[in-house]
Amino acid sequence: MDSDFGIARELSDLQKLRSQYQPELPPCLQGTTVRVEFGDRTTVADPSGSHTISRSFPHTFGQPIAHFLRATAKVLDAQIISDHPAARVGVVFCGRQSPGGHNVIWGLFDALKVHNPKSSLLGFLGGSEGLFAQRTLEITDDILASYKNQGGYDLLGRTKDQIRTTEQVNAALDACTALKLDALVIIGGVTSNTDAAQLAETFAERNCPTKVVGIPVTLNGDLKNQFVEANVGFDTICKVNSQLISNVCTDALSAEKYYYFIRLMGRKASHVALECTLQSHPNMVILAEEVAASKLTLFDITKQICDAVQARGEQDKHHGVILLPEGLIESIPEVYALLQEIHGLLRQGVSADNISAQLSPWASALFEFLPPFIRKQLLLHPESDDSAQLSQIETEKLLAHLVEEEMNKRLKEGTYKGKKFNAICHFFGYQARGSLPSKFDCDYAYVLGHIGYHIIAAGLNGYLATVNNLKNPVNKWRCGAAPITAMMSVRRYGRSHGASTVGIPSLHPATVDLKGKAYDLLRQNGSKFLMDDVYRNPGPLQFDGPGADAKAVTLCVEDQDYMGRIKSLNEHLDKVRAIVKPGCSQDVLKAALSAMSSVTEILSVMSSPSTGNTPF
Figure 1: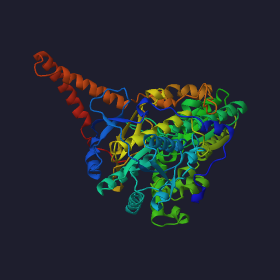
Figure 2: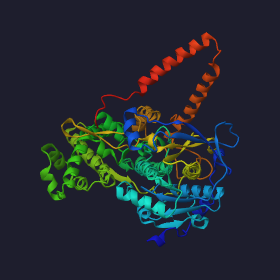
Figure 3: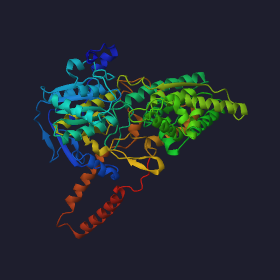
Figure 4: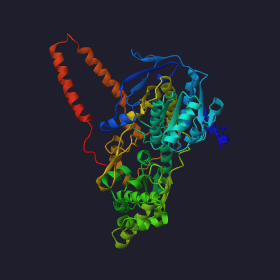
């Protein structure tokens, strides 16, 4: 009920202490003047999709990046905004709850009031459904008081519904028009910000004055690209799960007789599993990206785990901890193909009881091979994006079952001489979503809320709030905004008989980079983790003292300062222009031409649209 939203929480002593914490702001967001420098017009990382995206988003494609500047910055063409008329802004939670979401609203509210106390912030109750129905709650400091630095989305409620159909987009436009909103801020992940881009384009096309702004908040950590280094909630999720995993590791080492199979969040990407592995050092992790890249079958994965169990058994170690992302099941080729057949039959209206009989022979054989509990879970209706209900598919129990069968077989045959294999399974899916946010997520979310206002003040539409240099202290963070269309790509999806169809422009989940530094760090330590039991316990979330400022390992090891490099490149180009002027020597001119000719030739080849894309 709407009356349940925004009510004061009953806080514990720790929650009260956390509610008094005031996040720090970078220098570029301090004061009452907005200073913005616009960079070059943007393009997309994959040139092959540029034409399709520009046709789909004629009003919002190719907009420039924006950098927000500190008061002492000396940029000649910076836009200085000191006049801030009262603004009416709406904010909505979309997608699954992620720790830190409330601080986005707090930061946005504070920024609105600092720049003009007459501004107002309306929260939509119940997510996108509340947006369509125009159910709002005006945010006040009193309402925010018990939600500052707190977990959950219960201030406003949320939904995972999309804002995509013509009816939904029209309802959103009608709501913004009726409420006379100057801006709509959408808090969410990949899907939600794809919808934000479409809303921004539609609003511009229909001359709706409401600007649409996106904020990157998703616990899966998969809204990553050249502009976005991290997502609000990922840091907290990984720290909370890493403590739970570490506790299990200690238990395994104490009893020395159980193998723990732990499934973690991560639908399309394994970022959570990778980060938790680097923080807690379990014996094994099987990443969905590894399975997809190597086309590992269910048999391959089972054998890999069994071989590890046997190798440890030869050292008289009969315990261990194995991490799995929930998206692993869809990365196994034969299981993915089976799911596609099942979902196709479900869409045709075939009842779950009759599906087995209508599967192709190979799919039917695989289906009947699987344990009954997995068969039942695979028959669940797919999500709105046609993916399986991954949180309901107990991949950890499936693998534990298959490994136990194989180890019993090896024991009987005498190829394995260790103790009987015993497995305990866990799914750490919901335990961390409502956690108190980490100090990093509190700061990051609050800063993104302030950036949201800066984007609105600059009159920008279809932009995502961005922060770069996140691995450094807050006072060194670089704040800006990038057009959501610059983060989009267009993918080809395979169909039968070798045909393929081009998808619509979208943000796509960023998967673990198997050539990246974080994955390389895992590979370097994989053997040690497997055999040596170097379990590490980071402990519970720290809000002060040692560990409070610790950041995700995957964030710290990667060199991600994309926006900083763009600025550095422009500085070099400016130096070239300053040196190579009419009147410069022939030698200087020739050197510049030779160097620039080589550079442009290389870049032209690298940025040309790729050919022969293979459907997937």
